Amino acid sequence: MTTTRPANNIKRHGLSDRFWEKKPLAQLSQTEWEALCDGCGKCCLNKLEDEDTGDVALTRVACRLLDDDTCQCAHYQTRHSFIPECIVLKPENLDTHAYWMPQTCAYRLLWQKQPLPAWHPLLTGDPASVHAAGVTLRGQTVSEFDTPIEDWEEYIIEEPT
Ligand code: SF4
Ligand code: SF4
Picture 1 (cartoon, rainbow, N blue to C red):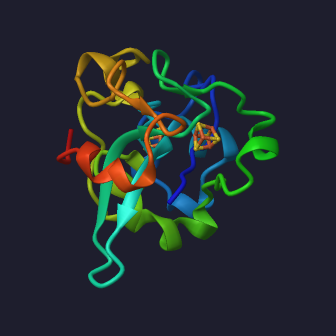
Picture 2: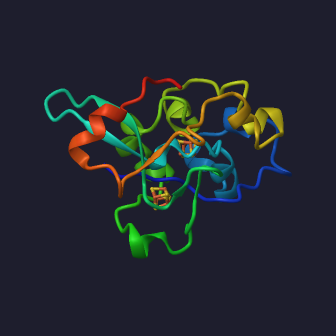
């Protein structure tokens, strides 16, 4: 299963205070929607889905375009030339995808009517707070090029991380 994310270079300045608590997700502006992304990059990790139970496990096997240091897509604008299945997450398709998003993902949390965690950059004002909180896999991923799919089970991670 491949993955998704809204955008790199997330703009979080000049937005209304706690806008995500005041408006339904479908009524957010594009800037507000993208600002919800905490930049963790975990949606760009490959997942394994159990066909019988529907359970989804996140692995440390990263999409070939994920930069393991920045936790961002290395070729965001042109990524669909390389990874056509990369999904653009929107309010309209969140119902379809939220179940397999990482457990700390802001979109999944808000879809579940949960609050944003205290380390979220929208609350700290610091994009690095997501890394400082230890919820990213920075420096811990392995390449999908070098890791055969039959070995991915060895790289399953326990969520939430
Ligand atoms: S998992 Fe969610 S919060 Fe993290 S990068 Fe992906 S879309 Fe953004
Ligand atoms: S193409 Fe880029 S945005 Fe899409 S899953 Fe890979 S690293 Fe993430």
